[in-house]
Structures are given as C-alpha cells and as structure tokens.
Image (cartoon, rainbow, N blue to C red; front, side):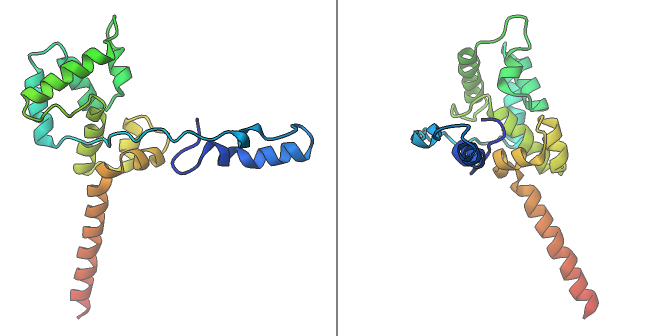
Length: 179
C-alpha cells in the first residue's frame, strides 16, 4: 500500500478517517475491521557484496550473456525489473536468476545470491566509500532517505559507525587540549 511503511499497518493508517465517516453517517460500519490481516511469510534477508566479491563477480560475468545486466545493475543500483526491461525483448526473471547463480558460483561466491542483491551491493559500496545517505537515496530513486534507511539499514551501518568514531576522536582531542 502506497504511503504505508514499516510498523504502520494499513488498518492503523485508515482508522482516523473511518471513525469520522461513521460519525457523519457516510458509512454504516467499518468492514476493514472485520478482516484478519494475513501474516505473510518471512523473506530471506538481503545481503550485499564486498568490493572484492563485486570485482570477482564482474570478472566472471564478462564472458556471459548477462554481463551488461550485471554491470548496469551493480554500477547504477537499478531495480532488477528495470534492468531486465532494458533490452528490446525483456529478459525473463527466472532465466536471469538461474544465470546469475551460475556466475556467482563461478566467481567463488556460492549460489545463494539473487540479482536484487546487486542493488543492495550498490548501496553498500557507496556507503562504505563515504557517499552521503541523501546522495545514495537520490541515486536509487527514493523520494527521501527514510526508505533507504529502512530497507538498506544493514548496508548503512558503516557510515553510522564512522560518524561515531569521528565524534570519539573529536572529543578525545578536546579532552587532551583541555587537560
């Protein structure tokens, strides 16, 4: 549902307006309250490649038909469905996943990688190299940093850690100068 993120449920987002509509006799009852929200299934958490892994992937993808897809996806952070559609005849998602697993296996990364993790790797590599969060959010097409922070939180940890380390250094220098 557009505009509903993280811990906000669709039901919680709609409740204020529903109460007003009932009070004004615009609706007889809130039918949404009668529905049990499905739990869904837990997905596999995404992971990101290190620079060494990404370099190995690019090297081993070079001799494959998926090379351009891998390069564009990894170096721009484009979404998988957008990358697949860049050809006159769009690539089939299952064929891309199968070919990508073969490339990651050849590169010594194992087979437990998916094409969507190229986008996560893009964010991680940018973050690891000091690119500001606002710039990363803009590059991956997010309207604000909120989505970037929520979805790619594990990739952004190094930036937060560097910030904390910088503050520790600053305050240690201040203590030394004060003493």
